[in-house]
Image (cartoon, rainbow, N blue to C red; front, side, top):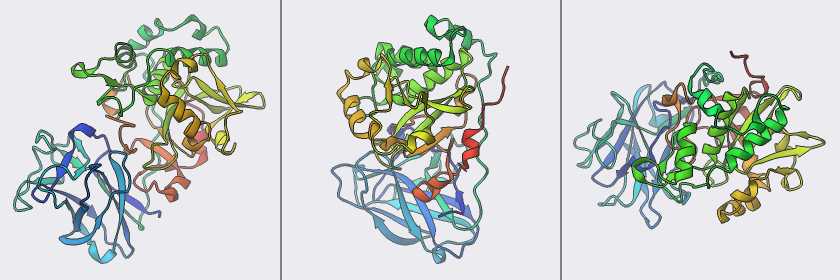
Length: 414
């Protein structure tokens, strides 16, 4: 399905502060749409309780449509429902969600906080009264439910430009002083990249959303501190997983003059087969090369490191092409990492789809960083995916690009 996606949020949710729906507590989202003559796709990010049996009920403009059953056990996931053109109208369209549960133990709907006057509403009395404040299951948020509609008509906006870090940011100098001498600018780029990857990979033990709830922000110094101490916000064990190795590498790379960008990998939209790596620009090869600072790995063939498109062409067995760095052994002390490498990484599953995060200015503009990437199904709109991904189930995202976009060299920065 092509067309245009309509949405009013960025997918920056906090999984531990979303909303619950019951027969009394209902959620409503309003989206302004043009008229359509074709079926539309309604996408929403929701989570069903593992032991729950009740379906999620929903209506479009006051008319109930078939209920939704569980499709994945993996926390907040994307659900797609086809809506007939006769059920939609030009102008404001209302989408309502509830369940037959009386307690908050059936379904939760994702919400992005931080909106001043959201077009999302919650009711505590079965839809008799609605409010767009004091939302979320603890009644402390004001935000938009993660509900989107894609119509066949229209066209998505152009892909976002890649924004670099402000190299005059004083924090970069402090970060540079933390790094090993093997990564300094006097050495060949490949040696520097390998040294930085190994150093980042050895700083802390991978901790995923399955083992903690407090997400570490996309701030390299904070990631390193929380990862080393094992304590984060409110004294809780932090989530410091593959994405955080990638963000630390990108920011530290900027301090060394290494052009790099953050990349999400996905085997499927809702599956636990994703990963997070970086791409580094190698002028000698004229391309972006994949570097994995979590597993301290690169993919190598015919005497050179490979880009992600080249990796995607290798087939289902990457084991003979992986160049492990010295910190891989440290990461393998986590048995979950070993399972991931065997079942998902070495088989190439996680490399099926690539999304480039359009910003690398994590120090200068932390307000544009996601709030919990990797703790749910991917939902942030700051990622740019390949055009062919739109037809592979990624229609809930708004930005897609051609190979030229991903292959373009970084802009010169001073």
